[in-house]
Length: 427
Image (cartoon, rainbow, N blue to C red; front, side, top):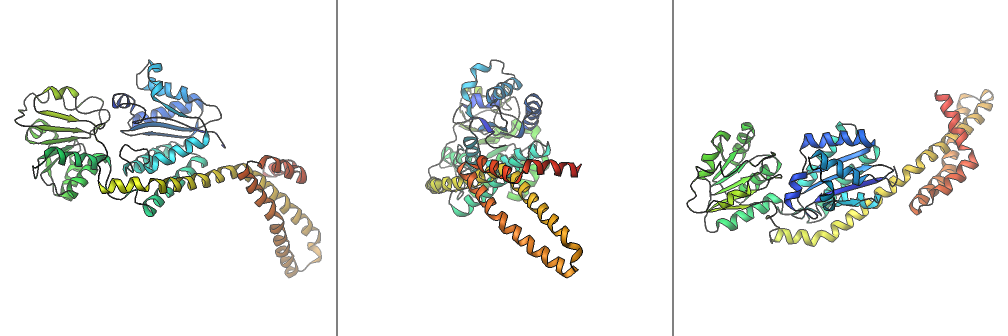
């Protein structure tokens, strides 16, 4: 597994919204892609992440098949002219680069709104898919749990997560700027997934109360409405609810736009009506901007708000990067030690066998009490003997010199022969 981890990434840093929404994967599509990758390439330790800002694939494989994975992803999304889209992808062929990138994505260093708190939950969901589909081995399990622990350190030791500078918070800030002196605008929230739910939390925190929730799953809307004392509307009355709203926030997941010029035909816009589209793919057709008085802001319009919380996060970046660097180094040491752990086990087994053979030769002449004492003494001797070689092996791992020491130990103790003998006994 050492030095075989790789990644491909398409994000808001490399591709515009129009491209990202073409390639974004829902849960069903992500799982289908994972099955394709397993069947085509036999990949292990596979992780597929797809959010509004990025679609990424992480995998462990001896060969670099990143370009082939990108092409397969594009074809799965119906984009057969793959050469036109490949330049939007970023490839991480080096093990250390791929691991570092995943750490930085998960803690929010690469989020469109820096420190976005939604990304850890989104990554956890992707990891759950890998685990459920048995596509996560010891390497990925250890990597993800190290990342989750690092996330906790970032939250506890820095100001990187202070305030609420998420995408949804940035959208609420934008709304307050747009409505200006309007003290309590009528706001309609359509779609109550993770982003929509976070929008509700931020609206309530800003003391905006004239809020209506509209969701296909009515029970989810009722639950949030009770929590925040908001109003609930039936999805069937969407046009009427848009008519009465000053601001419409949409975060629904669907392949085609929900809000179109046809839907708004019966809506008279007397002053201004603002649509904030947080969906990928977009749920508000850009053509609705042709209607007088209608203004549309998509997720690429949502920028970091220059407030104290964001400034604190930016100032915390060096500390966050230092924590990530430390965590990456510790994980690197662990992954390197995976190479020598079989040799350590063979050495322990070889010495234990010598100890048992020697004790067995003298057991018939000893009392039970004497046997127990000798067993204890010889175990202590063996542990002291093996301590130095184990420490030397682990130190050699960090220096990248483990292979030479492994060969020396194999020759000294004939460990390969010992391994064959153990396999015969197991059989």
